Image 1 (cartoon, rainbow, N blue to C red):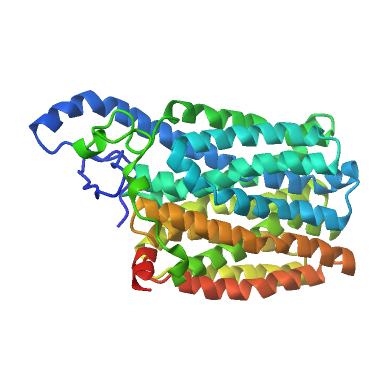
Image 2 (cartoon, rainbow, N blue to C red):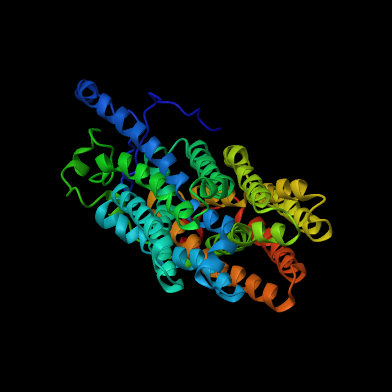
Length: 450
């Protein structure tokens, strides 16, 4: 049973290898009770600030990608890109997520998760501001990589921060930031073209405008950049209080042999296949509709519909998933919606455009499901950090060829039949490995047993 999203007075017992629970009341005796009066206000303030920071950070985790998808044709013309190079451009996000995401746990141990997320938001702002004015494809890719590096480390650390600050509300908080992520994704897809038109039709200004949202996301993390384990102002056990601030107890936990876990591999492959579908959708779906005869503005709205479906469902699906002993049935439902959407997109791309967008939007909610399973398949905060980095790095490596291959198939065949067939073919193994990843077990158990 998930606990409603509110402050709770319930005491939480913190294992010795875990960071102190920042959201729990630590009063266990007269002395602690007296200390509660001194620490309750800053702790409540910090938790609320973290919640705001999570929401604003999540809003920035996809606009760098979907804003580009809405203006891909204009960017291609402006920079003189071929279809294959444009396919490479749509493959840059998963490549950066794989390369930079694996660094996130180490950076978090050294500087603290909040400091790393704060730096990530600053990198997103800088990259989005610079890339439209780079002047050539190489500069555009380099600036995009800077923004995507910030997204990558934040992607990995979001489940870690949720597990640390809200250990009894993993499903609810995962749903909250998944909703914010979906909202940012759909908002960028829907309004990038109108904003560009309002700015005189200049695609550079339209893309650069999203840097403002990233700047806003930096602010709530600034007071938290020194946070290492427990919430600022929260009382700590004597054993932890005597430890150096830069070394949380989670950092002392022995590293899991994560590669020995079949569940970790299944989750990594599931993450990769759903990411492949998502980045093909974000990078190419608007173009598919435009080539079918839909206007640029309507194509952007259709892409926004696909993404906006994640706003309500990203809150519902994690809460449902945490109540089920096996998440496999949810995986199958989402996969079936994807297969139906691709079939409709091939047979009647214009006539049923809105219906296919709705179905594909439901299918894209495999992402919040994958994030929820990351939090459920590990017992400890350290385990979640390792599993999150492993699953996302493996997953994004797997997803790199997909958007590029779609660009090659599109240019080679002159149509969208072969790319859509590829999307259908990838959905089948996604459903299979998702079923395996949804089994009720933890990576700690599997790593210890092998």
